Length: 457
Image (cartoon, rainbow, N blue to C red; front, side, top):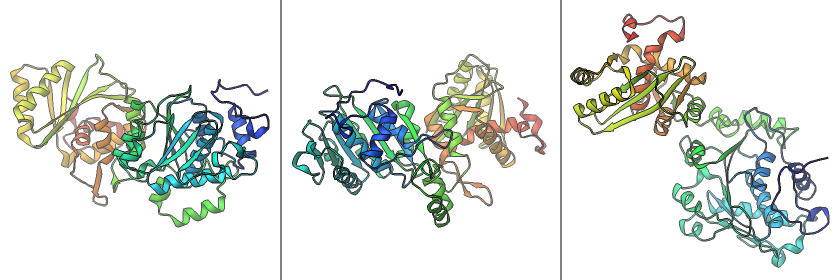
């Protein structure tokens, strides 16, 4: 016997099958298959992914206040959002839903799907006021309504429904998104919640920002790639998938079908490994444990990371930056942090030379027990980059600072063949790379530069 997964705030609209509200995930799947002629792909194939049925059930059952559907192109995201709006309007009296697409065309696409659903032969047509779906949505005789909105600040500031559905967020302006989040409001005993749905088209677009901020905003991430919708669990045939794989570029296939983060040129560090390091480090704090520091000097910006090596893993609990601050003042602030955080050694770029010399003078003046070890990037940088990759890709490094995470993702080669780094906004990664040189032995059998022993601190 199937047990109810949770008490749902839904109401039957009659006694026949099509009028009885689904009350379990299994009931929802069967209802949509029988009444709406739609079979949701299930279960998930990849270990860290979800099925579309998982995502739509969580929204319908109001399990989360904020859900993000990060899914492959052509996996039925807009149609799924339409089915969700249809179900909630029918079985949750007085439920309001707004659907906002990255463009008006995307919003009206959802309305087209809703019209298609209401034309199904087995649905309770008598609930639909005027018997049809209008240009922007519909109303039901139980007080529920669904409205598609144009992607404009004026449009999104109007209604206050309980349910906000954002489709293809990566094509939406941040101003529109921020304004739309003010819409949802609990009412008539129905919880407010938000569902965002999109493929990731842009390396540093709005969808990337929202995914990266999900812990902060309290959102649950649902992911499904081409494997979740491949037959037999889904509706993509092996032949269709094979043709797409031949037709698309590797970059497009990876980002839009396998959910690999799109790249800016040739990035130095793997997006996913940096993202995992940030998610693990989101709540880490500085601990009373010996620390090291690493610095990258800049004429306009200087960055310091505090690093704690716990042997099994590396924590980077704090990062500091100074912009347009005079060198002596910067060095005084750095030494104060070293004293407060018990930093005993600092690794820094050897250029410009006057920077680390000034730092040493202030350390001596304040009698701080700190050793400064300059790193010659022209000798050590490639080795140090591989050290940082080693820690990140094996999930042995945790970082807390959001700006740091963002800069690590954007750090890329200007010329990948010559391994020339693009010197744009590189201070956060370069500071960590300076520290990486001190751990060269972790790479195993490599020939170190002749001054390697000087890095022992």
